[in-house]
Length: 259
Image (cartoon, rainbow, N blue to C red; front, side, top):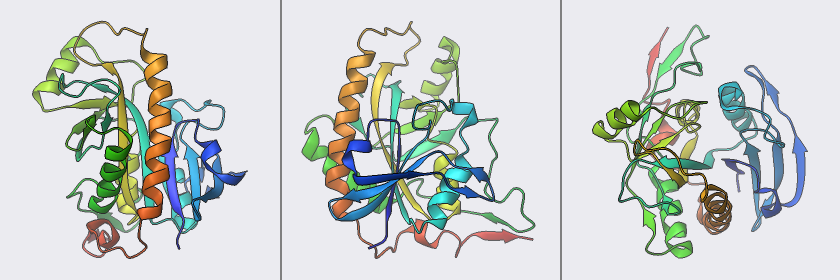
């Protein structure tokens, strides 16, 4: 079976059997560290966005190199995890959320895998995430945290490093934001441009409601979120099939090619 890619924070190394760490250099530069190992008999490549020791801050993540590394390693499916803020009072802190759509509010990153190429693909982002991977994450999440799973949410991504102002949060909520994060994009776009299936699961660790952030519960929610992510991934990965017939797998077949 083909390998599965996992993108997340730190804390997932112990999921892997006999992990081996390496760095992948490609035409987009140096990737974050990658850990190769096995989960329930399936080869997995785990990539911590911020590096092994969390030294890569958000604006310096080389998303293109990370996604292209997976492409060259033969990965066709990526499951990602994110700790985020909730701007929807109905999406409680500590719950598990599998977004169905996003809004890209990032500004400083490259916009495409192809913006330096002579030929450029204009890929369709409908749906925004792979429906098959979302289904696998939703089913696993409902086993891990029944009654505390949300399978419909729009995430707005603003690369930080600062948090949003009260007015920005008000604007995002009016535009329909349920979650606000910093690292999902442009990762998801580059995956689609590489014809790689991508979906992610989030845990809200703070409120984004225009009030001062209360940090007291953050460490507890973060720790619990990481444990929930591990269980979800452990359950979801064995259910993934190599037989892809989703929009992601045909992304370049139907893309508009500009020369």
